[in-house]
Image 1 (tube, rainbow, N blue to C red):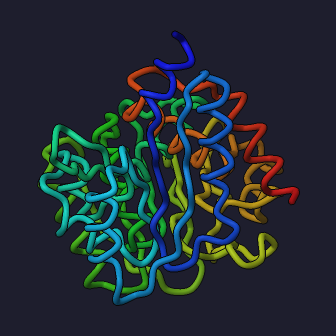
Image 2 (spheres, rainbow, N blue to C red; image 1 turned 180 degrees about the vertical axis):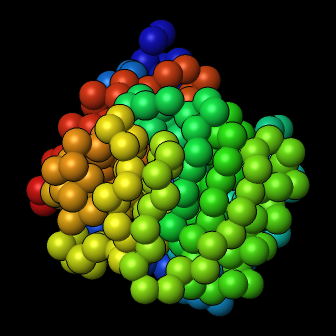
Length: 285
């Protein structure tokens, strides 16, 4: 009887992206499903740049219970979703999809995963935050840290247009003061900064590469987070730790992103140690 019930609860989930090789989400979520005794399967699917709308329609027709979406389709997914959560609407991009009846609902867990990782190591409520970058990762980080209670969010970017657009998006939430600083040369993180987030791509290809930022004025107990996923800490995080600052690895952000997806789909908490172990194993491989 139990076997029959499990078969009836068989569900399928997947990742849609142009490049999915090396993305550890499949290993992480399949491990979490197995640990929870759920007969569910997650598969990574590579999609051509001109084929996302067709892949989205196919996932709907085939009855996928949930999806993750990665580059370069997050904005297109927001346009195709039947409706958006407040976070996805504010960020303007979707990376997590769940079903509500026949509707495919678009959510964004990128920034929420970062916020959970930061909250596990420090305090967000009332924090003065600096976000480096103005792309998708920066947008998600700035919006979710504002939702989580940050008092000030300063966007530091080399491109003025995207930077000011992100500031406007944060300000429109009515939750945090938002400001913009042009990034030219080495950016000195101001004294009084509680949380600094590297939301640029610097360090992704080489963890030894670091963004041009000076952490010298940040006080003890301040926190530095990096969105880079890597088998070892980035040069920025090593610098932060060497100065006595709290360093939050991008891997922990990814663990919490996967956990949020699991919670959205399964309606219960994920086993974080299982996700961490699966990620570590995937990175070793």
